[in-house]
Length: 404
Picture: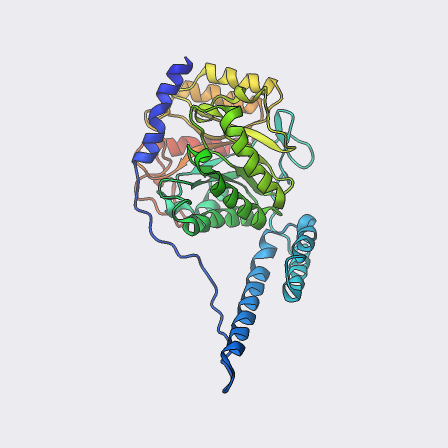
């Protein structure tokens, strides 16, 4: 059965990798600042000093604008003090002002506060088991039009989603080759989720993360430094490893990335992929990661994966591992086919019984069974039910009713 499972899934990386849409070029938005004119007779050295001062003021203004948006009151002053050692007098003052503003005008808080792995559950700040339902966006390099505040707001207000997943592509035209383009997409989704009071999973979407560990370390370090003070963020550091060793390949990679995250963010949840397209969660049992707040990834597609995969998941839960279903589908493992009503019902019952967080694949207008949107659906928000595919209509109803 395990061999059959691997065979069924083997087409899936080809499915996602084989379909591509030309991604438009995005320029990271910047504020413009006009430097003071050089006084008559001033030297070029004086001009350089003016430029340096202007750049410093621009950075100060930028931080003053963005820091209160993502700085919850209970953690803002701590992070402001931590930054001060690396900042000059002006920016030290700006950091303190920003933290004070955060105390006066805090960002919208997510409903359960900071998420923590506790035993085989993910719990909120009060120790209550948390089960959230939401959507995953498609590979970021191929569906950039949905990496917008409008999409996130629509998922929150119309779908009643408590969580959204940004599938930031690493390879195949992703962060490895155009880091600033993909970084801007990640920030757009995270900022929007924080503004909506939602949780947001930032996923390193690849099947070969162990081939480029330094890029993942850089990306997640950068992310943790910018957003580590927000309880909204969850780091998913490896989407779907293939048929590789947990202890020999995945765990060493994960430990390296987690170490960098913890340099900037000591306590937000980290989710780690598992072998065989994040199905063999039980491989982790004898050799888990030693970190206070780690969960492990379980992915399934209801048309392909049935009782055997649930048995693996139950074994991991019984061993005390916290699991998160960061990607699932009601169709086949290749992303296509018909909705498997009976199997979906069994999986939903399993996730409810074990109070699991889950995100469905995916917000996309690709012509395939797993897509929630019809071809050509706008990415600017304000969509109607008529924009949803049959799959999208079913998933929206599941998400809307999840917390009831």
